[in-house]
Structure formats: C-alpha cells, structure tokens
Length: 72
Image (tube, rainbow, N blue to C red; front, top):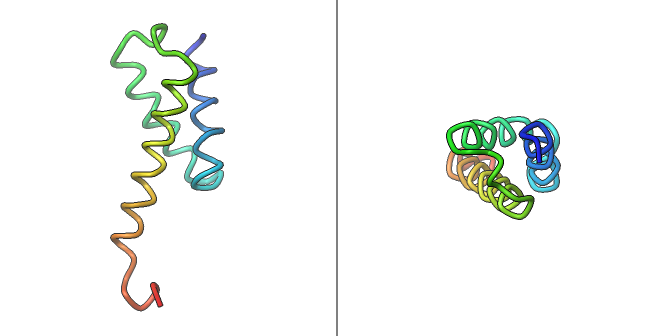
C-alpha cells in the first residue's frame, strides 16, 4: 500500500470523528509517523487505529482547553 493511500485512509477515519477540517491535521500526524518507520509494513488496520487514536487525542485536548463558560 502506498503512503499516499495510507494518509488518505487516515484522513477518512479521522473525518468521521473530528470533522473534515481537523482530519487534515490528524492525517498530517499520521504521515509524520509513517515517514519515520518503514511505511510499507503498516496495514490498513494499523493506520486506521493510529488515526482513531490521534483523533481521540485531539478531541480530549480540545475538551481540556475549552473555557468553562463555553462548556455550559
């Protein structure tokens, strides 16, 4: 599988969780990780899981940094 296809898969998975705009950031983070390790060893399931974890982390980060006034 090519790295371009893997990054697009990450973008699709992330878009389901955080929306299309923030999915680009998640896909970028996945691309950085894939470029540091032999990308050809990563399967679809591993890339999807990584994208889900990065998207989940982005949501948690956002939740921690929302002012109290906006939470109510």
